Length: 239
Ligand code: PXP
Image 1 (cartoon, rainbow, N blue to C red):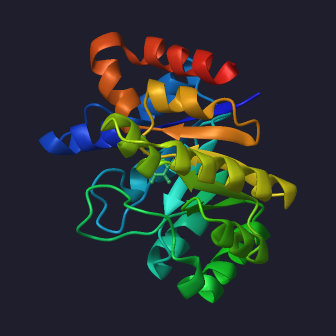
Image 2: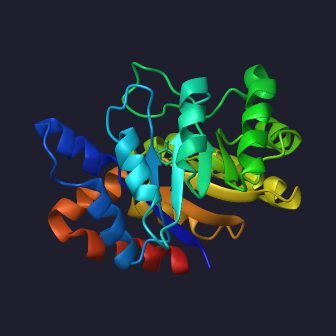
């Protein structure tokens, strides 16, 4: 059974636009779970542009809610994440000027640093994941780093599909990486830029166990409501 993780950062973005307390991402996390999400994702960015430390703490203390915390390799963020103790962490690259995460991690350059960070979370029995580009080399490095999971960056595929360009080569890369990772004993997730169409393209890859979806899902909810949109995504990934 494939799982759906819902990224609720955009709820915090909306709240922050007013500098007040509504809409509360804590309520969003509870609601999203109630209507069928298997986990929620939040990204504690270095500039705290959406979720802040208090949100993360409150969300991680909600009972029976699985929380995936995305973090960079910044040492202060790592320390904060270790204190907050989410169920899962996913290490992502972070660049202050970007609007959203633009690519996968540069594993070659940051091997040692990432390995040490993963070991700290593993010691606390927190599931670890690395956000990587669909590259076999990166899958093999991920294995060396001893991560539990990888999340394959689907942003390029999504952009190709949305702009009506040929996407089969990018899709094949995702398929191959999913197979190799799974053979190496790494659990495979996928995320970034996914909408109904791109999720339908990926749902048949049996190695992908989890999808993490945010922007499109929250955007569609303005028209159709969170409950309906989450049910639609669950139906798509169920096969
Ligand atoms: N997965 C990761 C690692 C991400 O950084 C993001 C964006 O925060 C997502 C999934 C969700 O991407 P989107 O908001 O485009 O659905």
